[in-house]
Length: 365
Figure 1 (cartoon, one colour):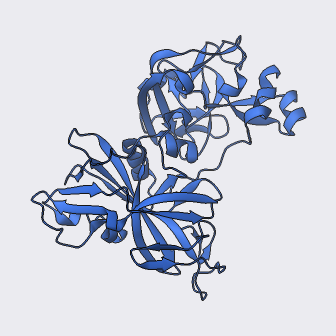
Figure 2 (tube, helix red, strand yellow; figure 1 turned 180 degrees about the vertical axis):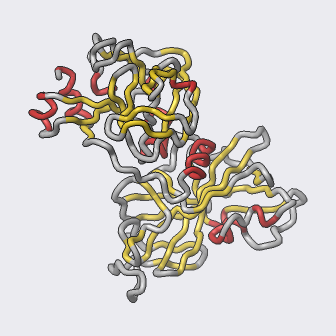
């Protein structure tokens, strides 16, 4: 189950820069059918938010991600409303039906679209349009923010030609918050194996070929980077040379998963090879946390989840699941949505994952 609190459509005031009403109706509602914000061109738009005008949505959740169109054909597979809710005078009531044409129809909660807005200082915020669908009747009922919400009383702006709109989207739940500690990343200087030999991760760009353990040379579809404080849960982890087959020391973000194989993995988990976040392997000797004032992390994305060789050690590529969705900023997510327009945030893991306490058993492997 999941719970999400939204600002109702009635709590979002939209005007043009002269204070006039939008020409084409409320864009938060109209954006169900495309970028209704851009329909006001050439007028930029000003949005203010009443954080007291909220509604709470309770719905089924199987994967921690709120997506658009949670259906297989006409059958609902996730995100069914579990508690009645009234928004703007209309009440939606849960139904036991799972097929959209049944009566009463199933009712689902959905992530309909994302829009990038800016404050007076140019800081970007990502607005999420949240909808409820009853059978085939979809209505945008409110908004949330992916990442930090603006301070109370702050106006945000849709700037024609600069703000972006993305449909068929996904967001982490609950909270819709960004946590950069969750993404698998390499540090500057890490050598990634390519058909031409090892190359520094910071030199790789989309289209470059990298070597994968399972599928040989594969093209990068997206490469990105971010600078964050290198302390606390963002502090990098150093793997000493030779510990995982790496020829040199290798530094990774704490949630970057590495491939562990051998008798211990087979004995403990019944799998010849498993993925485990490197933070679970920290032993203070061969694998150590190394805080620093700032760190630049690099992300490598392929068509699917793959095993790469970094300094000779088998490690994962960027996995488009909940961790990446929560970790990447609005600009990076928009770039990835452009590369993979058809719901990219549901890749399959290339190997079974071992987490938490079980992962720590592999320190001695």
